[in-house]
Image (cartoon, rainbow, N blue to C red):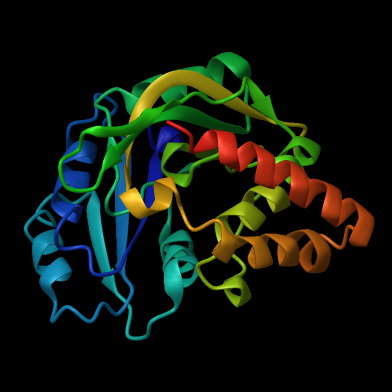
Length: 255
């Protein structure tokens, strides 16, 4: 039914190496009522990623948009969101992989809990070999705005939300591609009581080995900016939540 259509939002930047496998994982879904909107973010790859996607556009559910300017992941997602026709919005990065029962289980989980937002657990794999780098990340049962200030367990490629229970939200492009998804969930959780975590492992997240030791130092300043400047929590609260985030992040990326 059209009312159960899932719009899959996929930004792509230099995605030729992995986007084919990402699309294949969508085509393999047991739940088939979806549209996939892939936005190439003006990739400097001479159209290599676009060529890969074009091999799949004979399926009318797959739509490719080639942006004429580089707007970052937030801008590319916004382009796709404006085209999305589904009641449900899902995100899938162009190098991640859904398990075949991802949509089926997440839609069922959403309806069982009458949830506005759901997200799942996921595997963390090497970008090339696909072997697990870390143990799977198991999400909490729920997340609220307050808990999200301490840590964000929502990985975009695991999330689906219902636009009848929360408005379709657009990304803050002023933030670029760093912490933009974090602000997205914070914004959403101001208007809903909570999001629901599905402990089933349903996604493979390609994680660069450099991210395991991960350069968290590069993220400290943007994290502070979100807490202090975007959320306007003040110096004391921002400092508290930044310390919580740093401690939890350390354990999140331990083997």
